[in-house]
Amino acid sequence: MEKQCIECGERVRGRADKKFCSDSCRNTYNNKFNKDSKNLVRNINNALRKNYRILETLNPDDKTKTTRDKLLAQGFDFNLFTSIYTTKAGTVYYFVYDQGYLPLENDYFALVKRQ
Image (cartoon, rainbow, N blue to C red; front, side, top):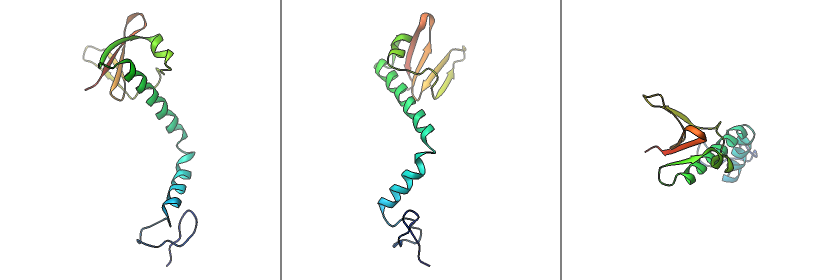
């Protein structure tokens, strides 16, 4: 039985488990497959990446202090983070991957980097 490319229908030559006739068809198929179903994930990942870059820029020494206004001015979204760390004392840190922030008094934030 002759296998056909699942993208263009051309004859597939080569390995028995091969699905595409060329790299071009494989890329085209995967791009179509991932396009619409992954928009939400892509948008969230882009926003998380932006938050990460902002924290990384404002925290070059792995531990510093900044204000809410500085974070907001750069476009930081406080609703998006990857994890929450609560210390034994009950202090809550919000992390975007390994860059974190701790809300302090008077709209200040401690910025930290997890080692």
